[in-house]
Image (cartoon, rainbow, N blue to C red; front, side):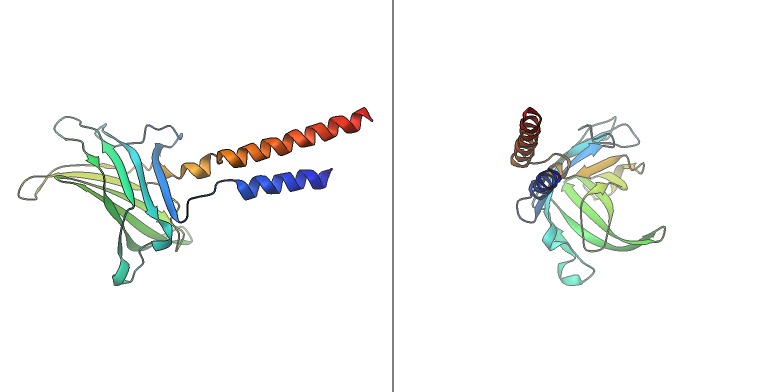
Length: 195
């Protein structure tokens, strides 16, 4: 009986979140995983999604230091004189190694442009990986026609996250397979008790 349960548990792990190749989609959420997104210090909000090819992460070499995002759909809100924007494209670049405690982590920066607005997110990651996570810095600037910064706002609280929804919720086929296996275990247990 324990071998069956172990087998079913293994199937649940094997079939849990499967991504489509190496392109990962990330959703910007609040720390409590609500879709509210992040909050700038002026009360403005940022939320949305972006996708990138994790097999083509930028490195410290010059040849591929800036890599375009596969897709982006991120919105910021208007507060007072600061005009929000919708960002539909951008890039990710490697910005060096940072020491956090005793760990050496890589710093990745996502830049998004919706002229005249510019949005930037900063992430720390285990070297050679990008799994989203805490947005350690978010900043948005609004430029005038001479490209001078007119307004800027930031979120340094780190309360926003970029998560891969496939990692938070199992794919439907995997969840169904787990449920079917658990139903089989329950039926077998019931039949054993009947004998």
